[in-house]
Image (cartoon, rainbow, N blue to C red; front, side, top):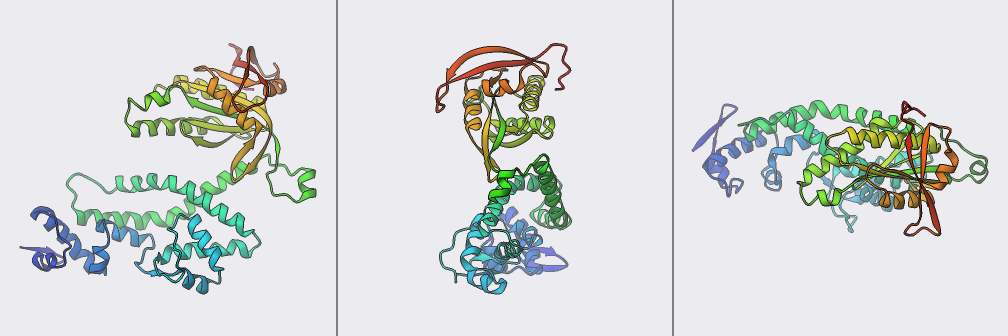
Length: 385
């Protein structure tokens, strides 16, 4: 049996001898042979194809910098003038496999050199430990975006009846157009987030005197909102539907909040928000609760808010208000915004809020009784604080 590819007759029998068609029936074998013939013509070796579980993606990977060459950590360390131990720490922060032997040429060159380039940040004066942490957080965040990028590209490629060769060629062509745009996209998103993080960021006298890294401990209001009945829902709907619910809640929070209120993170079925002004945070959480009520896809939310001294580390926040707000959320009723007395005392009635006292509670892991208050808006209030 033969197939024709680029006017060249390729013997399937010859390809079968390589073992690259093992386990495939005649129809799939002919389609795979067509792909392999094209890959060989594009410069990929039989061994590259053999060791690739999805040879259809080889051209797309090459478009993203995978040239098929592997290097050792020591080689990259010497070529780029970066300390070997530091390089290995950055590689692990990027999520690359741990390699104990620094002379083993097992790291993809493009990956290892991406790690080595972070030396430039240290050369301009950034602390090495901070750079490693920054790389780790960036890698964690971007790893969540990668599936969305992949599906966006594949949605432009896949169509009914498409062959493996057509997927490979189209996938590569689309990625070659998309790849140059990804760097500016990430940069744009990063700068937007940095600008938002810097809004209202104040350097106080004690921080200037001590020289401690920003942000330090500061007075802060913290809120959590989670979906009522999410655990039980997980037993009745497919996992992909649960993911969509979590993403919808995060999207809704992004749509509603604006500085100085900031969305910190999603945690399972909940979101965490912060603000130096408790009134603005309460206003935002009331708006989020109302939006969830109107959204036919989301369950009701329960929301807890507290204020106090908190400290930021690695884009997360720690301290009493974080713990208290989390515990309050656990006991809040469906559709209720429950506020600790610490935050209520800062706001009072000056912002169009209506308060009703809830019983004081002994919260898990929180010393003493916590005074709690339900809050809602005056009926005539337009929702602006």
